[in-house]
Image (cartoon, rainbow, N blue to C red; front, side, top):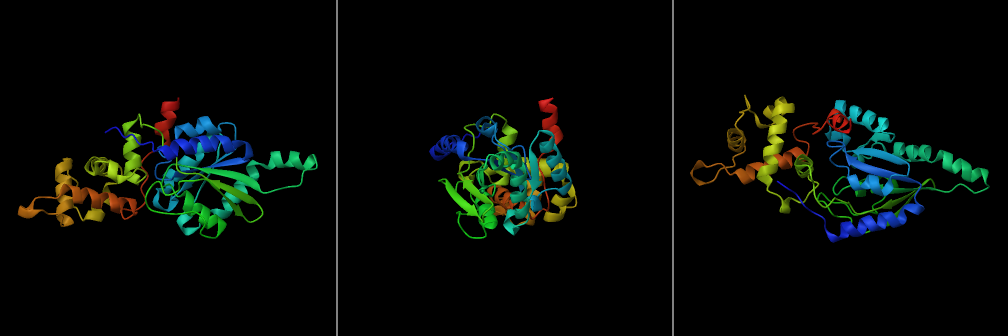
Length: 288
């Protein structure tokens, strides 16, 4: 399954980010803690390579805690400051401001030495759609400024937001890349809800999700759907879950579309518990 999705406003967003960089002190790169590598846009490295960067792993409450710690260590080994947060609950907001101030300390110290009065840190927030940028901005600014939604592509324009006297944030629309060369990256993003369901075959996405869960989180899968065992045959597994959820057509035939929709909806809502879809060692091996 090859996923291609590059709406016009995303191409425009990339140009706008490039144009605004000269005003920026630090870049806050927001990623999904459940898929910290797949939810990073590789184009961001090209665009903001020279700016200090804070990698923020959002939705940490939905991710496997053990792997979140590994991912933070991975990003810090690459030279980025990294923290985990739960923007929905407002957890980790103070750490973001503190980390941004830490990253620009040398620059601001030089400004002060030259007689320039201290000002607010200017931070650019970047991230793919549906990773939680608008929710983060509203929580950190303590008011509803940015539009939020549970579907990708809600933010469509840039805006500056003041956070007290210490921080100014520039929000940007989510930027996806034109084509996912790695099919696995596309499937992981689709599973998390980062890509609009309307352009996907949900059965394909659910097949990936169920195979992954069977291999890495079998007990959580069995517990959620009250299964005594997990069939290695994906059709039988669909059948078992469909029966448990009453996804039946006339004649007792399993409604696979409805079954796929239920699995993905419950997975995205955290009903199966804390799940992380990738480990740092996968990417460390590739980079090596």
